[in-house]
Length: 104
Image 1: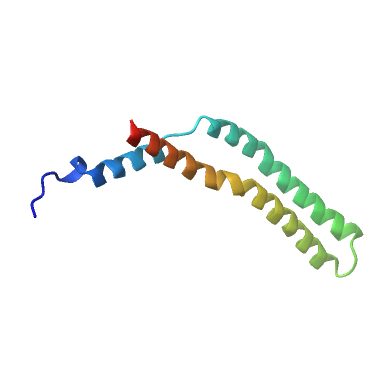
Image 2: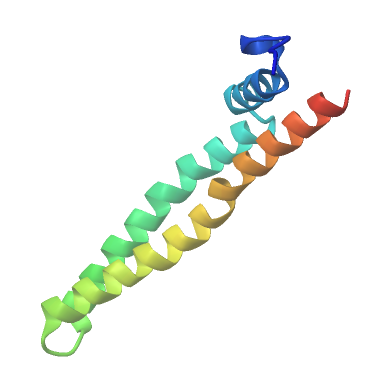
């Protein structure tokens, strides 16, 4: 067996370079996602704090336990919704960019 190419000249090296380029690139929609996150996160934290306060004031006994559970539930539900798409989309975009670059 004889090696005809080494390093970045090989097919594997080109694939690694394409994936690295795709991961470094930033999708145009990412700016919008950052702006939305800049509003969404403080609003969710405020709603969670408000939930905690209301359960401490109006909730049944044990008030602290109910307040903590409800405040954390707000964070879990909101974070689950917020993180579901942004965590998956960059990998989709990077894979698509690498696929398009490989086919051209």
